[in-house]
Image (tube, rainbow, N blue to C red; front, side, top):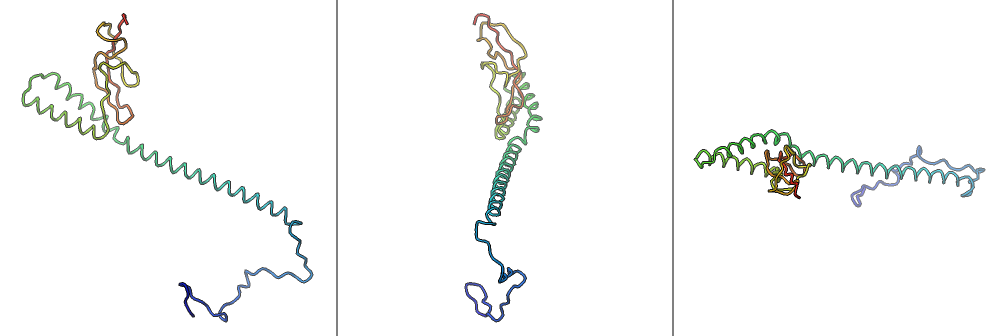
Length: 189
């Protein structure tokens, strides 16, 4: 036996015919029909079957591709918003820090320490994609603001936020909590 191109050549005397898979020989009296007479309808059937199978294959490939894209999108959404529940639990702590800083205007060491902790917490949330909703002086937007009170005043434009009572937050493009605000009602404008 010799090797050529990584394959072993078998001498002719060792090769045996695969008789089980051979096509039967035509009998001497048997006439083979010319192409087109009996085979035309069979060829058309085979072509129709092939076209049907190709169509099914194309549809299944498209369906698989859509499922793969949907799964990737769902995974990305999960990664983007997995922190929502945790951040919602931390926001009241941030509110408490802000209230504590508003009640104590003197600059004692304790006050400065609370300011530093508040700033660290804000920075950590910012790294996670959490940002406050802008409110004061902005036009009232019901998607981001929750109006607690309408105040008649000449000091601000009509339907603009006068005061922010509780800060709102969003993570990426999802609103975590709307800002609770007082809205100006200006009868002169």
